[in-house]
Each structure stands twice: as C-alpha cells, then as structure tokens.
Image (cartoon, rainbow, N blue to C red; front, side, top):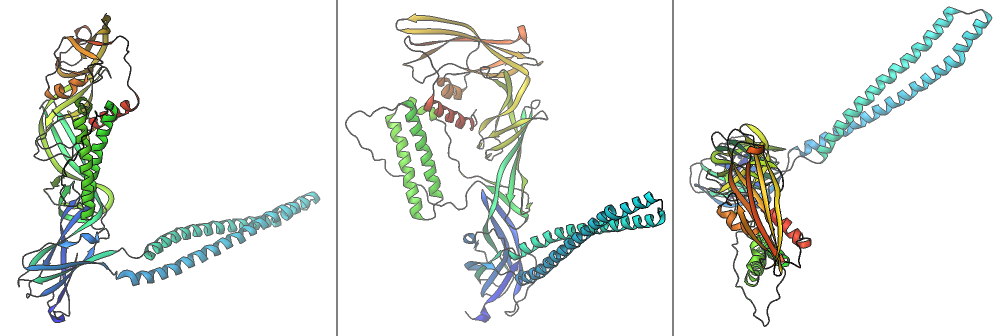
Length: 606
C-alpha cells in the first residue's frame, strides 16, 4: 500500500466538509444514533457517513469520543460498500494544551498582583489605625486639658477650640473612611483571587481528556457508504419507577412505567434511539455445563440434622450456586468461567444431596424462593435527548390500563386497620422490572410501595393503603382444656368483628393463624366449626394452609356495632401433657425472619 493510495478522513461531531485529495484530509460528521443503557454503563452508536470515492484503502478517524469511553469496547459494524480491517483507540492530543499553559502563566501574574495589592492595602490600614490612635491620644492629652485650663482661668478662646476640635474629627473621619475603602478593596481582591486560583487549578489539571478511534477500512464500492462505530461509556445507569392509579368505578388500574436515567459519560445524547437493558454487556457468553452427580454409599444410617440446620445449609447452598454462576458470567477468561461453573455444580450437588437425604418437611419451607431473572430490554419508541449531568432524568417507558378486582385485606391479630388491595394482570406484553411504585386511588395519593419483576401475562397484587371506613377486631370467646390419655387437648373459639362504615358491601380477605411446629407427631392442630368456609384459593391451599395460616374470602355488608359482620371459628390443639407450648428462639427464629423478609419481597401470585 503506497501513501498516495491511502486517504485519511477525520470525523468530528460538528463540521462537515469534503475533499478528495490526499494532501487535504476530508472532515466528515459522526452522529449519535442509538444508546443502550445498562446498569453502570451504556453502549453508544455513532453513524459515520463515508463519501463516494474510488475503491481503495482508507483511514477514518472518529474524534471527540467522551472521557468515560471504555478503550476495550470500541468496535465498528461491517457495512455495505466498506470492509472493516481494524479499529484502534488512542488518546487525542488536545490543541488547547499550549493555550492552557499560556493562560496559567497569565493567571499566575494576576494572582501575584492581587496578593501584592492586598498586602499594600493591609499595610495602609495599619498606618491609618495608628493615625486614629494618635488622634485619640491627642484629644485626651491635649485638646481637652487645654480647654479645661482656659475655662479655669476665664480666658476660653471658643473659635480656636472649635477649629481644633473640628480638625481633630475631620482627620479621624478621613482615616475611618479610608480604612473602610481599603477593607472593601481587600474583600474584592479575595473574591477575585479565589476565582483565579480555581481557574488556575482547572487549567493546571489539563484540558478534558478526549479520545479518538482510528478505523482502517477498504472501500469495496465507489458510491457512498455508512458504518456504525460503537463504544461503551461508564457512569451511566437506570432504575425503574412506577405510578399505579386505581379507579374503583371503572375497575381498572392505569400503570405508568418510567425510567430514572443518570448519565455522566461526558457527551450529550441528542435525539437518539434509546433502549434500557437489565443485562450486563461485559458478561461472558459461556453457557453453564452440567457435571455428573457422583455420590458415595457407605454403611450406617446418615445422622439426621435438626430442621434449622438442614434448612440453613439448604439456603446457603442455593446462595452459593447463584454466586458461582454470577462469577462465571463475569469471567475474563475461559479458565475463570470453567472454575466458576464447577463451583456452581458443587453447590447444586449439595442441594440435591439434601433433597435425597432430608425429609421433605425440612425443605418445603424454602419453596418459592427467589428465582433467577433473565435480561430484559425496553426499547423507547420516540427519540430521546439526555444531557451528560449528575442529576437524574426521567424517561417514559410503558403505560397501560389493567382490568382489576379491588378488595380489602385484614389481619386483626396484628392490627385493626383494614387495607385496600387490587389483583390485576400484566397485559402490557412486556415484563415489568421490579422497582418503586407511587400508588393513587380514585385520584388521591395513598403511599409508596414496591413490586418485584412481573412477567408478561402474570397476575399480581398491588396495595393501596389503609381504608379508614373499615375496622376489624379479634377476640378470644372461649377456651377449654381436657386430658385424654397422655395428651392434653385445648379448644379455642375466636370471633372477628368487621365494621363497615361505607354504604356499599366490600370484599374482604381476612387472615389469621393457628400454632404450627411443622411436625404432626409433636403437635396436632384441628380446625373446628367456622361460620365462613376457608378460601379455596389454590396457592393458599398449597403453600399457606399447611403452615397454619387461615384465610377467608368474605363479603362485608354495610354496618357497624350490632350490625357489623361477624366471623367465628374454632380449633383444637393437642400435645403431650408433660410438654408446654413456647415461642421458638435462636437460629430457628433468625431463619424464619430471613425467610419472611425474602418472601415479603416477592409478589403473591394470584
């Protein structure tokens, strides 16, 4: 390749001129077209228009890449009419460097003059204060005693005394005004000095670093061509934010899904096609491989561990498996990914061995744990402009209306307050990423809550806060005890009263509970008569009822006091008469606390 065959094209962000000679390089315009924002970074695409020209090798320089550019991420897409040979990345030498050094020298001189002037002004103030002090002593030691002596001898010369006093005050006032003027000059100089020192500090650090990409390509057609330069920038990210507006009259909830975007990449994104992704652009593409589950069979029964220890190990193994997979996807080499992949297999083997050896009751408590989530991408329909700044900026993502069933929920064993809730389904055709939610009901803001990630088509529930027009009270009506053989049996009867101050009936999900050990051999609990049947909800019957949780789905008619809706139920508890019921503690309580918190972060499927 000869020098005459190589044409050099410099692409900037603002100027567009063209020249076909080798001696005068052409200047083209690169335009930001697409941006995909991840968590912590963003993939930016620039469209670069290559002018018509002969089929020949070409060097394209894309300059003014932002300071947050990841050097290892720069690449160019293949395009029709050109063949990309290679892409290089380098620091751009700022043209302002020499000018900056010259300006720093001028600032140094200005700073030196300001400091000198301030020192002179401070010295002048000291001299004038000495003059004022002299005038004070003169008045005390000469003027006043002289006037007193003349008055004693009866020869007071009023005109001379008046002139002397006036001269004394004029000199003192003149010194005071000069001191005030000098103080103001010193104050102004201090402000200017601060500005100049900040400017000097900025220039001394050098002009903002910028980069450029050098694309070596081969024109394969004489006509114009277009290619895309792509690069990752750091200091970017986004979080979801929702508004849910419930309308009880229409039986629907209007959903607004917004993205709170921050980007400090160093360049403004003007009128770009924006996409928001939950993926990580730096993860490895190595798929997890499954290794065989090798076990050892030995004599003797395995020592059964306590329920607490078994569940703790089970939970830890699940956590270790997820952490290992995360390390695999972040691996920078095939060896790193393979080692992390094997660690994931080891953790999964621990989970499977516990499933093979432990009783199902020890493991069922962790069913429905946190599931792994794939990546989601949201493409914004309209072009978006986002400035490079620290302040977060909001971008609308999705909106829609969901048919909803509004109802109330109450747990009077915890509180007499009754809460509003709605069941709805995600009909947007897209997954809804978990995030913060502002909730409104019939035009009134009722509070804030959270939602987990909701898959397309999945049902979920959203809370709308307390309804002050309903109240639920729970009381123990009867308690009895009998002894049968070696066991004691207790019978309990409870009553729940719900006041409804509305003019219309409401649907109420009512919750309560009975004691539960998870082992029917030590504690037997039997449900007695109930004025209302327990809920037939499939999820309740499968997951909550075996744990001693009670749930009723009832209609509460208008009325309070004697006209209130009353639910009455009974149950029995039977256990060895030598035992007593006590609250759990220690590790078991800690485990249940963590399990409760994890479950509370997930939405209840309906």
